Amino acid sequence: VMNLKVHSVDLENGYLLIKGAVPGARGRLVFVRNARKGA
Image 1: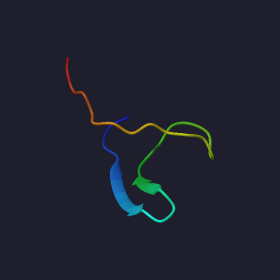
Image 2: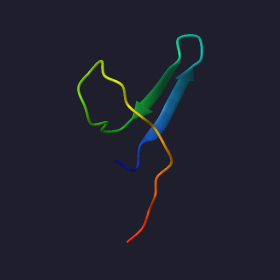
Image 3: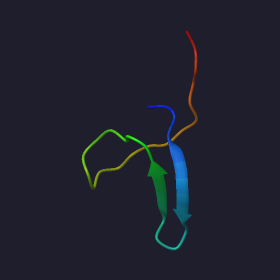
Image 4: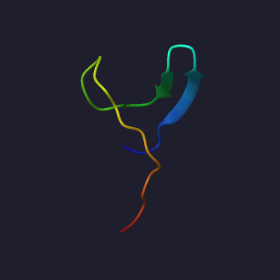
């Protein structure tokens, strides 16, 4: 999924707050990496 925005980072709890449609169920792990655009 592309076009997600990092809203804020909670270093104390280890949270990365993302704004946008993140796929997957609530409470599950999500892996975040740089987008690879290509045709």
